[in-house]
Length: 409
Ligand code: C5P
Image (cartoon, rainbow, N blue to C red; front, top):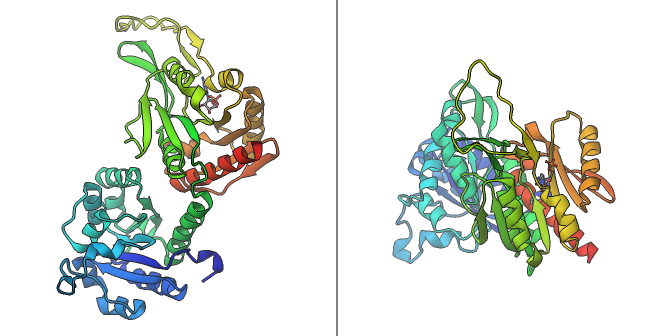
């Protein structure tokens, strides 16, 4: 294995659940063992029908865990398996396993271990395309992500059932690389923001037209929430000012919920004096109805309806005036096709809002997606980053921000 694929700590718990892709877990175990990593394998009953525990025992050179009470007579607790481990990686992860983990079940050795863990967790889903795209699975995956679980893949391609679509487990080499990348990023981020206060805005704003209608932007809030979590993990005291989104608050983060641009601006200005870093990730409406109707506007089919809009306050631009000492980071979603155009538009926006750092992406790629590809714009030019999962990208961006803040001071 290449040097960059080596992870810092020596032990990984590999969970295997009941999917045809279970045979690939053998290769995964082999790659880690070859890289000098100790692998403790835990298999569900269904996994044991696809691949023999003996295979994994031979490859890992260690006992394989298949039963809840295994080792109990020797005083070995299964929960102790994850203590001191660098990560639990469940590959393949079935739809059923994702559902049970999202619920916090602990009815077999692997689910109990996952619930009792202190270490990071990764899942590499593998299933039929209909099972993967089913709203229930997608709901469970979203829940797991917000609980801090790292979801690797799946890929699209030909599936074991003969159908074609998303649901193929990532190849073992890619899982090894993704886990290593995660730890490389974590080591780099460390507690880079210890003692720092960070404020972020996230999600859309909603500007009332009348009591039941409004203007808003398409924004899931995922990137802003991932950044808030990453900033907290990097040791910062984090305040997250969130527009209307249905996302749980990351642990250790103070959240203030707002609805419209004016409320978001008021919340920011009320708290900004205490802050070192401001990251404006929210998709703030640029215009709001000048005079929202007090009663629901009735439909007059023969008439066109004209709304008069007034510009909202530009929070970031205003902060440059009110709190120039704060390290201000903007996000911009552009709809152009070429990285060159996006960077040019972004740079003009960065100048206009007087920002040391602007992070720009293509709106079509970023909205609602779980991954993102961005370009960083600062006084030294444009720095593109490769496409990556939003939680990994969040940690990378926190590192970039922390480094720039350090240089500035
Ligand atoms: O909408 P625009 O592309 O100008 O947004 C770029 C950045 O400006 C984002 O970081 C957004 O949060 C911020 N913004 C703001 N107040 C506004 C509009 C945008 O702080 N009214």
